Amino acid sequence: MTLEIRNLHAIIKATDQEILSGINLTIPDGEVHAIMGPNGTGKSTLAQTIMGYPAYQVTAGSIKFDGHDVLQQSVDQRAKLGLFLGMQYPAEISGVNNADFLRAAMHATAPNNQISVLKFMQQLENNMNYLEMDAEIAERYLNVGFSGGEKKRNEILQMMMLQPKLAILDEIDSGLDIDALKVVSKGINHLRSKKFSALLITHYERLLEYVVPDVVHIMVAGKIVKSGGPQLAQQLEQSGYHQFEVAKELN
Ligand code: ADP
Ligand code: MG
Ligand code: MG
Image 1 (tube, rainbow, N blue to C red):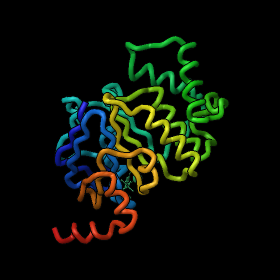
Image 2 (cartoon, rainbow, N blue to C red; image 1 turned 135 degrees about the vertical axis):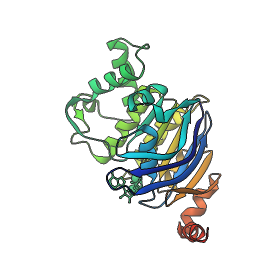
Image 3 (tube, helix red, strand yellow; image 1 turned 90 degrees about the vertical axis):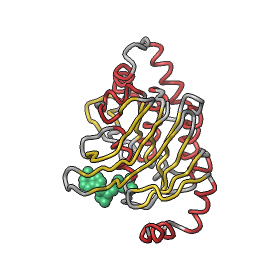
């Protein structure tokens, strides 16, 4: 299930401002790719545009997943195709119990693959243990009053329960201490297989020491300006983004 993004341009509907200015990105089956880039460069916009969130409008280009024209699909249909987004700022939803939300999401994304309540509870407990999450988190309102680290673990829990084909994880590492980072990384690595791919969006090389990507892309001002192996992230840690900003101005 390859994700293929070609010449993608997108604007923010509210301001008409172009944020994505010709993104080209191919993520083959089974690969983990990372996108790094300075703040405000459009990383979250890319993530949310792939998922179909309504604040953004695609003005040119294409997104294909497993041959499907993703841009013709609703957010729900994209989730059914196996796309998943772990949000940079997970929403707090009062009145919605975390476990109920997960069960509903599983049902919505895989209606033909329903499991019993008992089996669901067992899977939930196993995954929560694996992520070293407090059992009471399952019964609390979705993300309400969760710490930053609990919210991020909860995004990984959702991913482990939903078993998407392609997970986009937007700054899943931000605000995590080293122990939480290791746990979150363990969750991602647990899913790695020939049938799972991931796009990790991060500012920091640290996450990529625990989840070693196949390819690292550098994004500056709405474009991917360089791609390479994991060593690119280490290089960046030392030299920063400035070199790429200069290179872009010359183009
Ligand atoms: P990154 O994730 O790389 O930090 P974002 O995609 O969040 O960057 O943002 C890119 C630019 O688009 C920023 O200038 C940001 O302020 C703007 N932006 C993103 N989403 C919205 C929105 N919903 N409304 C207005 N401006 C937005
Ligand atoms: Mg940002
Ligand atoms: Mg962002």
